[in-house]
Image (cartoon, rainbow, N blue to C red; front, top):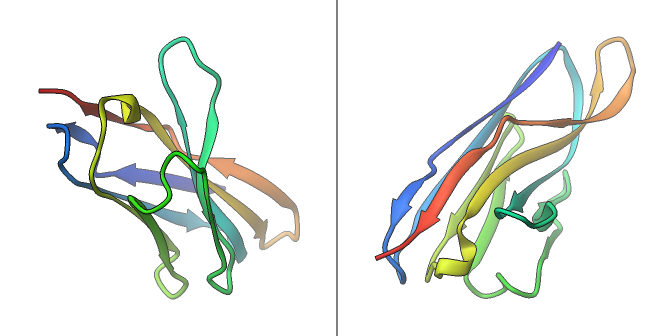
Length: 120
């Protein structure tokens, strides 16, 4: 069994900052790429940022220059630092990880999501 647990969501005013964290635990043999996705009401889930095991990052155009993704391979964690938040960033944010488990099965896992609301 593998679990991804997110934390750090909440309510913030426009222009503010939030830091999301996600920890993977369980029967992990190798933790590969990790990332954050988000889903706003009435919209499809979209990619926000990803980071490879080696630290290569990608970002959605809408968050470039404002969000930073990082990871700690020793702690099986990924962090999304979000600055200059806008009302349009309001969404449920989901952690994603590509994991090979100890029984050598490779698949993607998802967290349950954490709500981010940007409003004055």
